[in-house]
Amino acid sequence: MPTSLDDKPLHRGIERVLISEQALAQRVEELGAEIAGHYYGREPLMIGVLTGAFVFMSDLIRAMAIPVRVEFIAVSSYGLATETSGVVRILKDLSRPIEGEHVLLVEDIIDSGLTLRYLLDVLHRRNPASLSLAALLHKEKARAAEIVPDWVGFTIPDEFVVGYGLDVAERYRNLPFVGVYRPDEKPVYSS
Image (cartoon, rainbow, N blue to C red; front, side, top):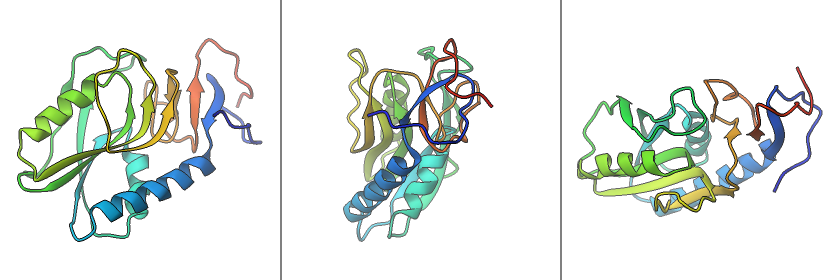
């Protein structure tokens, strides 16, 4: 589902645009409507997984026509690498209890699934009334942990992607599209 490149220069290491800014905006609006319909009459507590999910979550809550509350949790399993270490650490925990709450965990990408499996287990043990998962991206990966999101924006091939909140070594989060990152490739355009 690659899209054509527009006239904006791409940053070094971005091989191609995988999901355009327009496609992201349209799908996030659709997800917002679907999720709002599911939670109609309730006020979900949306927990964004920092730092990658902040852009997606920001757009998602604006697309939801119901009251929502927002919290953030930060975990780490990548550090500055492009592959997970398999060791998950909570860097910033929630500032309030979630017992009895209708919790929607908002994640940028399901890759190996190890971090999410750990995080969902931690949140489940805190006794929310319900616990659901919305992910912007879900990688097609044969060995991924069995994580089935309640809502997913896009299923993508097993490639390393950046943009729209996703990063490599804290770079590229501000790109308005999702692009395939290939540090060894010559950029299509350089800045």
